[in-house]
Each structure stands twice: as structure tokens, then as C-alpha cells.
Image (cartoon, rainbow, N blue to C red; front, side, top):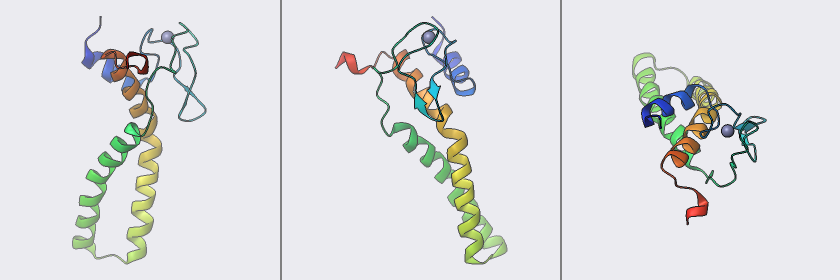
Length: 119
Ligand SMILES: [Zn+2]
């Protein structure tokens, strides 16, 4: 069995089936396939609630809030600059981060055997 760190980083940068490491996880943008196209491993057994969105927004807030404070103190821009810049940054960051974080979320459940079927 591979180490947790190896699988974690592999999944973060190349989201694939945690069981075989080959099949796609997603259909469309962030919707999960019902099962792996390569090994038929079922993805429906994993909890896919709001956990990934929570982590994405927490990470983005940890970056955006200090950045917004620094920009305000250093440059004192108009309010509309803050609204446009930080909304765009949060939107782009969410789009870029949501899929890898969802893949890691599934990988962690698979690695630690925390499927819905166990409960
Ligand atoms: Zn697979």
C-alpha cells in the first residue's frame, strides 16, 4: 500500500480513482461519476457533502482577508475595487481548488476506510 502522503499529493494534482489510480473521478465539472470507468469501484459509497467547500472557502479566506487588509492599508483604493477584486479572486480560487480538494476528500475517506457503508 502506498503511503498516505504519496497518494494525497498524487490525488491533489491528478484527481483519479483512489482504488486503481487510473479512472476519472468527475463528470462535468465537480459531479462524481457513479463508479470508476477502469475498475468499477463505486464512488457512491463516499460522503460528498459540504466538506470540500468548507476547506476551499477556509483556505481562500485565510489568503484573501489579510490581502484585502494589506491593500486597504497600503493603497486605500475605492470600495468598488475591493468588491471587484476580492469577488473575482474568491470565484477563481474556488473554481481552481474545488475539484482537487473534492478528489482529496474522497481519497482520505478511501484511505481511512470511512465509507457510508461502514456506518
Ligand atoms: Zn478505479
